[in-house]
Structures are given as C-alpha cells and as structure tokens.
Length: 212
Ligand SMILES: [Fe+2]
Image (cartoon, rainbow, N blue to C red; front, top):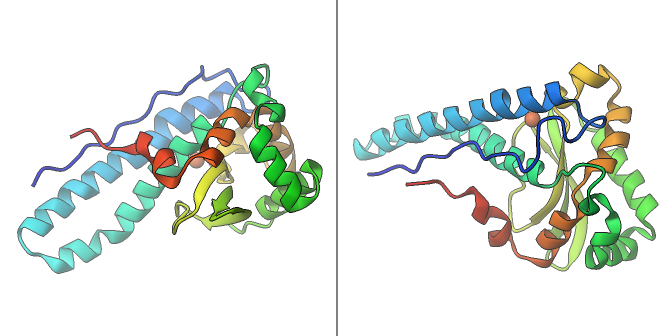
C-alpha cells in the first residue's frame, strides 16, 4: 500500500513580511520548526499505520489515531493559517477586498466591529492551546474554537483561522494575548477569506493533498 507524503508548504511571503504584527523570529520558528514537526510526525504515523493495516493489526491502527489526528490537524491548520495572512501593506489586508463576505458578516453580527469583538472574545476565552475560526456552515457564518490541533470538522468551510497556541505569539507578546489578537487583524488576508467564503470545503482543502 503506497502512502502519500505530506510536505511543508512554502510561505507566500517572507518571514519578516508580517512585522510588526508578527515578528520574523516567530514566523521562522513557527513555520520551519513547529509546522515541519507536524508534517514529519504525520508522515511517520501514516507510514506506520500502513504497515499496521497491511498486517491486519487493528490494535496498532487504533494506537495511531491520536497521532494522525494531532499532527494531521496541525498540518491542516497551519497551512490554512499561512494562507489567510498577508503583509499589512498589501491590498489583500483590506476588508474591502471581501465584499461578499463582508456583507454576510454585517448581516450576521450587525457590523464588522461587532464581529471583531465577538471573534476576539472567543479567542480570549480559549482555555489552553487551540484555534479560533470563522466558518461557513451551510448558508450562515459562525465563530468556532477548536482545541489543540483539532481541525474544523464536519461540513463547515473554514474562512480564516487564528492560532492561539503560545508558540504563535509568546516570544513577542509574552502574556499579552489581547495585543496579539489586536495586531493580527492588520494581517488577515481578506482576499483569501473571500475566496474561501465563495467556494466549498473541497476548494479549501485541495491545497493540502499529499504527493504520492
Ligand atoms: Fe501554531
């Protein structure tokens, strides 16, 4: 049984491109070390899983479920995250580039500011490590949080996510979670968000296919 190999995607910008919102040091460590580790561990777990499968070792298969979920989720979440960020000076960082999505946000939360307040509150309410996501669920928008590296599951389409693990901000913001969130609004890629909003779940996840 051949197993696909996942690889670390290239960032669509330089490590220092999101400064001052996110430091180059954080971006480099986060991408080249943290994300790479999820990819490496995912590939190892899948290879071992294939061996367990070919030898009909159900106990061995079950033992690997957590490793696949955690590292596969880490790979999915970070890949989506890099693509939903952009330098603050780029045109994509302007919410005006997401006309359709912005209309839906305003309809759901009354105003963009109300939405930002609700999203920020959800992020600050996360206990421990996790993520906050704006998702499209059928025809409506929702804010959801996921624990650890759980990806957005079910039929929702992730529009954009914010990594709330300490590795995403601590070197720069220390315990200042609120300041990290305030600054990350400046580097959200609204063009990517608009594209995801207008597409389906398969469109969002197609960039994550393994190379065989
Ligand atoms: Fe992360």
